[in-house]
Amino acid sequence: MNAKKTLTTLCTTAAVNLLAYTGAYAAPSTHTVYSSGLLVLLFLGFCALVVVAQLIPALITLCGMIKGALANKNTEAAEVARH
Image 1 (cartoon, rainbow, N blue to C red):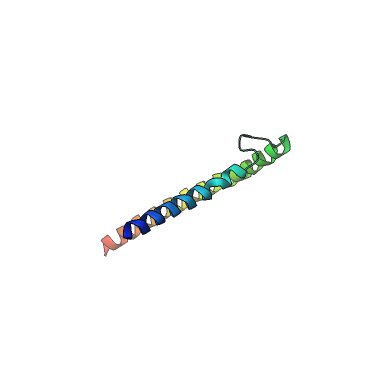
Image 2 (image 1 turned 90 degrees about the vertical axis):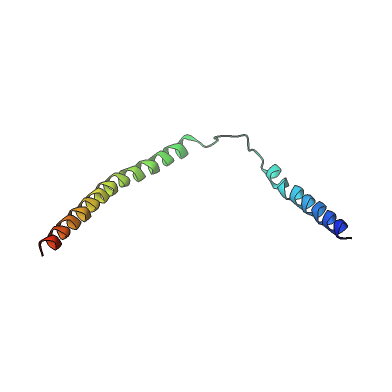
């Protein structure tokens, strides 16, 4: 009796899993790689340029903050060693 229930559960689970994956077939054109126009490409390039332009000063500031924190840590250690 327990084997029949296990087999029924297994078959039901397999059927539900097979029926759940049919949504991928509903996509109309998955073979198209790029279908946008030139203006979309230029807009995305401009967005990437803005991100890179903001990233460079942020990295320079981050390096300065790290150097300052390390220099401050070294001077504090020297002051503690003097006392």
